[in-house]
Image 1 (tube, rainbow, N blue to C red):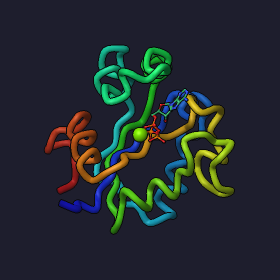
Image 2 (image 1 turned 45 degrees about the horizontal axis):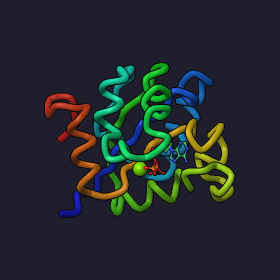
Image 3 (image 1 turned 60 degrees about the vertical axis):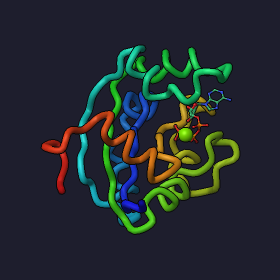
Image 4 (image 1 turned 30 degrees about the vertical axis):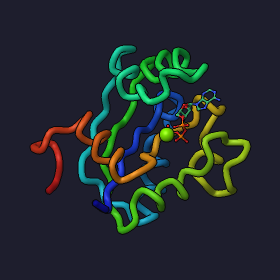
Length: 140
Ligand code: ATP
Ligand code: MG
């Protein structure tokens, strides 16, 4: 079921560099509406659960350590075709491959510390949004 919603995190590298405001500005200017948002910090265990799908990948342990290393911003975003359009706005996983003008091209430090997360499907957007936000914490 297409929901027109996606889920994002501003990752620890971008948050600690003070880039959250600039990234949120790009997100809003691209037409995404904020449905829920909070600043928080993952524990290694919650990061492990969020990225469980990657648990067999060689970078999993490093990724969980990195994602729990400092504060993040989590948000649910709404726009027509949200998942696909947001992946376009953030650019490729590796900033070296990301298109000019994308969030990762501008703000990411490395393939791991790549500034933002974006859901890869409507199904995962719903799962990830529910991971962070209860119904009362979101608009509609
Ligand atoms: P995200 O899910 O965070 O939006 P993505 O969908 O572009 O990113 P995934 O393949 O889902 O990429 O990987 C999840 C995250 O794991 C990446 O965003 C990055 O932080 C990290 N990662 C991916 N590949 C590597 C790698 N080869 N080395 C180190 N870290 C990696
Ligand atoms: Mg992914």
